[in-house]
Length: 238
Figure 1: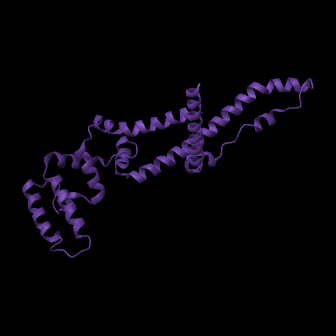
Figure 2: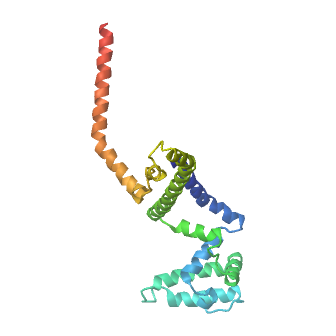
Figure 3: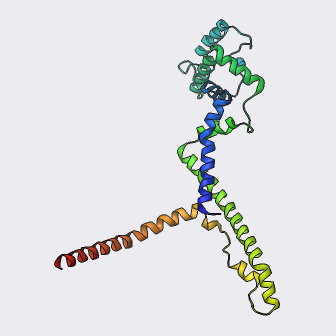
């Protein structure tokens, strides 16, 4: 497979990642859903249990529970190492439960659970949390694995093509004793894919060649410029 096909395949993967947010919108998932999903994973506890209320609690009961717990969990009153985290989570949970729309979405999560790996949203939520360096590393790993397997696929294709083109012809020539070349010799000339031809090795090698070749390129450019200048002067003298 050519490098062009490989690049097109990578572009396809990139398109999937770009289009995932659009897919989430198509399924009715918005920023509130993302906020709730993230909070559910972070808190890892039933919001109602955390606030010591039942699921049918009124807004007044939710507000009263928040005031009581905020006094207990506030970092100024709580010396625990994770006081800041617990208080922040309490505020976030309260913001969800006091809002009728967000509370309804959370109740739906309690009933149906979070989107699993079968959902596009599951992958999107993990991609959006990945940092630039991590994202680049993951993309490089994916691209390397794809490149390696594509190289083997291209090798198999070339081998199959060679067998189809030369196999029967060589047998006929060998029977007539018109050639000593066998099919194995031809197939052995097809380069076998190597891990050293993948991006993690080719990128540093390409940079090394660029750096080491820079002086020669500059020298060639200077020489070319000098030759052009000399030719220009000669034309003027004529």
